[in-house]
Image 1 (cartoon, rainbow, N blue to C red):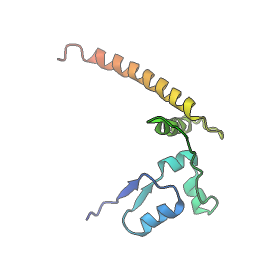
Image 2: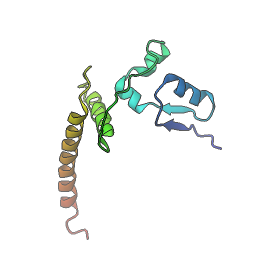
Image 3: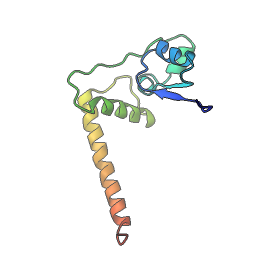
Image 4: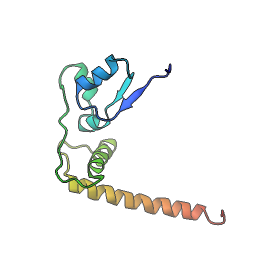
Length: 120
């Protein structure tokens, strides 16, 4: 239907799932966001047949948005080059996520309130 490459992301947890999606011709690229948060070198490891599957954490009684907060904060650690081998717990991630959002809200509010004076 299109000549543009098609990417699908969300839900790929195993190498076989990713390979099957591409091999079927349904997609050209698969996104592995959460898998890469757990193992940033996963594509290289898969290529070298060194690690077949990432080990996804399981969280019991996670509040709405809690798991997303955990992955987001883990990704922030990787981006800030502060990645550790020990993953933080869910409650710590939720608290860090909320603090980060509160700080960002203050920055954005100050910026847009300052820039919106006299624009209405």
